[in-house]
Length: 128
Image (cartoon, rainbow, N blue to C red; front, side, top):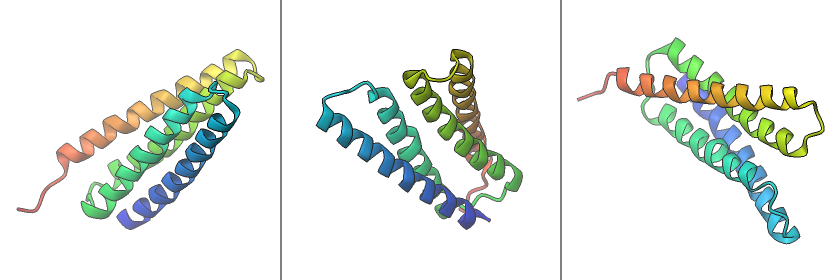
């Protein structure tokens, strides 16, 4: 199960890395930096955090199955929600309430994911 989570997170991080790099290239070429916060969050939480978690599941292989599942799926929902919500907020073509629900909901879900990861790490039994 841990390899499944690792592979899922690794692939998602690759997608976010590609999106973040393309967005950065576009901003540099167009001299339009309106998406700088979205670009930064896509690379930090979408690429780096998700990649770090993929490595964690590959190296440590936690035994807490439910906690691991909750962490992985809240991470995915949170990262997609937060970054999409930020972009929606900048584009502003949906009603503001919808933008904020996606944005805040994604951010809150991602925060929950970080809490679950912290709990997972501190309750993980280590080999001595």
